[in-house]
Structures are given as structure tokens and as C-alpha cells.
Image (tube, rainbow, N blue to C red; front, top):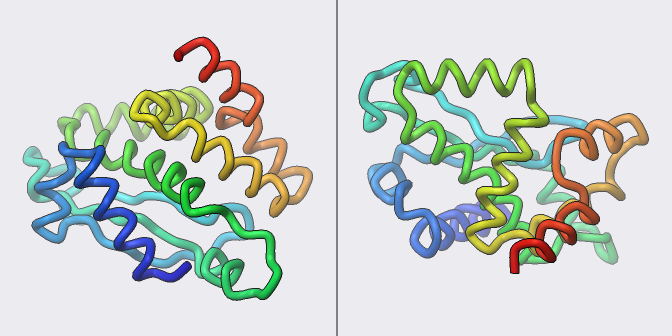
Amino acid sequence: MSKKVIECMIGELIHSSYPELKSAYSSGRIQINEFNSRHYFLKTSISKGKFSKKGSRRTYSVDVNPKFYFSYAMSGADVPTYSSVQGILAHELEHLVDYELSTRQGLIEIGLKALFNPSEYERSTDIRAFKRGFAPGIQNYRRWIYGQLSARALQKKKQRYFTPEEIDEWIYANP
């Protein structure tokens, strides 16, 4: 896995499943950046023009931890599958949809929800990605990432996001 592969996957996902992001993507307002973290491999950010009235002035990034690339470079390493990476990227693109379609007031509300009730926000983001068909990929990603985390970080992930077992329940209830 490399930054280039992630860029290609994001382009494919936007063209196949996220039409509301096509304009931002084609105009170069979605970028891939790197960040360092002990517990996260992917996240999204909103930057330039974040409080602009017009979404067309906002820029976004999908931020990738270089450790994610390294996990692929290690021979024999337990690595996430292509579909699991697609799934978690779909989750991250749901955040970009929120940012792109929100008004200034909506962005403030998203920020407050993410700050004060992150579990509600992240779980609703999961559900939107599930509805687009990415539940199995997200489920596989969560299984993979659970093996990469400390006990404390694992507990936080299980509280904040759907667990693989909860995803099974969601899939069963939403055929």
C-alpha cells in the first residue's frame, strides 16, 4: 500500500459511490496528507475556507499515517485487505460529504458533536457508509485494527465505532 494507491482508491470511491464529492475531487480540493499517530491510521480534515459560506472554497484532506504504508512493506505482516481499506476510506469520505454539504452553522454543529459526543457522530458516519455497501469492508478493517492497538486504545475504538459484532447485527437487520 502506498500514498499513490490510496489516492487511486479515493478517486475510484468518489466516482463510484460519492457523486457529491466529484466537484471537490476534480477541482483538487481533496488532498492526501500524512500525519503521525499511535492509534489512528486514517482521518479527515477540513482546512482552507472552512467557514466559507460556499463549499467550493473549502479544501479537505484524507490524512494517512505513514505507519499504514509500513505495515504493507513488512514481509509477512498482518495487513488489511484491499476491501477493508476501501471500507475505512468510505467512512472517511462520509466525513468529507458532511463538510462539503454543510453550511457554516452545520460545520459548527459537526465540530461540537465530534468534540462532545464523538461516539454518536462516528457511529452515524459508520451507518451512512454501511448504507452505501461498505459494512463488510469496515468490519474487516476493524478486525484488523483491533490487533494493532493497545488495550486502552482498543476500548476507546469499541466505544466510538461499530464493532465487528455490531456490524454483523446491522447487516442482518438491513439485508
